Length: 605
Picture: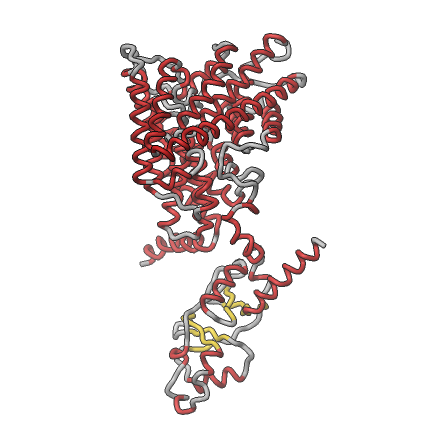
């Protein structure tokens, strides 16, 4: 028996901590979401790499470079059958259009890609992502990428991870606020795993939903989720980063001029990338969809992408292999210029037509090629200053995405994780900051809002955050509390009432355990009936046992007052709920709210 008690005590302590300590709760939930999103990312990545090998290498006979960290399948290309590409992309496009139109028509208005759909769910849908939508978008994204569509993995995996977080939050019956936080945690897990950058993935997920803000409350579970997901992912695929590249460093202050030019170039190509996408999506494919239906719009996009990819296979899928070659200085300036224009067009045809996939990888591709263009030109004319043009590819990737997605920190950290060092930190910070300032007039994600004040998700929060910042311990008086026994007669209870000014009386059973409460309002209903003085007892009048702890916030107290309709609620000891420290009045909460509002108003006069 003592052994059983010994084993149960830690479990009881854990349950108490989970219930009352938010950091413990988020630790547990973050780990659970990380496990699920990490396994999903591993399966998603493996399916894409196998599919690309079978379709693009074996069936189409293409020999495309792959970054060293992603070269999973090796083998000689099959016979040259480049016509396989347009057939594959068109078939996938038609299937995608039919599935979306038939099963998830609401996702037609979800935004740019999976990341944008996650952003919309956070702001406008209470953190809810339907399982059907996440599954269909995930599967069709695999088909899009393996067939050769110009799309990335990061957008779909962020939506699938967010869907996992949303599903678990619903299963655990969490609040809408907690569900939104878990949604971001799932997205962070997916991004951290698929990009092999746990910190960068976590920070990108919590900042990409705003243009000028970030979701601070989601940092802890997002980091935990990302680390766990990354660890699981690397268990299957190893810890090597995506790119096998040399160490880069920044040592000449004169080089900042060239990084400034890089930022200007990335802002220009970013504007072209975003505007081209929106024009092709809304001025071309949206009109086709309105007249002929989504399936035919996606079908046309898939056909055009396939034809373009058949003649220019460098534009197929994500293109990370070409980025690695650009970093290593193995491509020409003309090639990089052509890739900037070609990748922008290919991605607009693929995602703009309604096919599934992410804009993240193509954005990194265009940004990297832009940076490489500036770096190689600088090296050609000023080789004593621009000594490592490959570093400009990496800085261009981060700066470009920071500008088009208004995400200054996450992409910067991702690049430092990719390079496994901070040698390029100064130019990364400079270029990213300049791109954000220069790119304020456009955004890759349609559902981004400026800050929390502009988010529908925080409309309710803005009305209650004042009470959430106030603690019970600051607004109740610690004094002895009169409690009563549940078997006490009505007559004895009326004598107790006469000796105190309490409005609520905690009720104990024979074991001195609090089992309920009696309010003065309940007692008044029968206390003047002398005929039942000896027949009725406290147990007949008591209601449920409700209590607060000193560390609870006043918003939690307000909810308990509303639910119980009690005029007072006992405040119990942090470690021992059978020890009552005092009572807090309903009026105390209202006075605290009014005083805080008044103080805030006076501070702003």
